[in-house]
Image 1 (tube, rainbow, N blue to C red):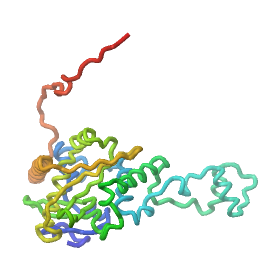
Image 2 (spheres, helix red, strand yellow):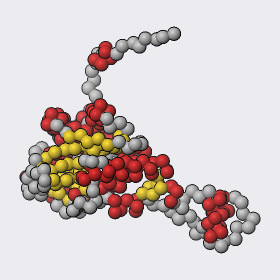
Image 3 (cartoon, one colour):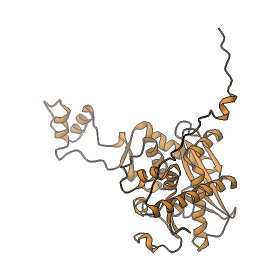
Image 4 (tube, rainbow, N blue to C red):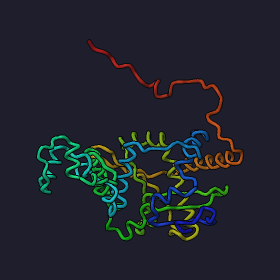
Length: 324
């Protein structure tokens, strides 16, 4: 399959290097994000990804995460897509406009209002900034997190732009037809073919608030990261079956970096137990999707009444003594 072909052309696994993100997203195929939504309920999936889905706008944390990915994985084009507010020609202050007028020898005598100064300095209209503009604070976060991943003893070698074919194996698009006839897709942050270790390392960057072992495990449960680990591992394995990737053992690593100083990094390998549970869940989601598609029925939560109990950890909490 080439970039422009329809998913109907997929009869065996496909791997595409350097496919533009917009093209990947436009391909009508099921992703791990969609399957995780199905696991909440088919109605949630339909609301988020169905034909009548509402427009989705990334949160500030998501936008920072995307920029960190770009800075690490596509460094050569980062500056074309992102910029610091201090480096734009957008919302100028009055002192800045006066300085620009002075530099260009523009007569602004008698002008004091911002609108008049803008019209004098930019008679054809202010230049439009097409890049994503970050505040100085967020700009430092993006660069701090990316630099931390590059400087880390483990991830530094994985995300070294000097590595042969570094960019080629970043943001790799994978497509395959499932045993249920469902077309699936995945976009892997990095496939690192480690000849020394004799293994394929699937690397996934995760920006987070807390990447301590306990904190990250909470994220794994909350965001079903184990489903992603299993799904990506399965897609890479399918590419191996048809010779698109070397036949080597597959390891999946989460490269977690905190979005705050000191931008601490932790690396987590997905264990066999974690992958097995992820496989169980995404297989359940695929069967559920096939069933809903056949019946054109997308239900929400089951209409049952639950007995609400406190979690086990609450019984272990002890009241602190209050001293007066």
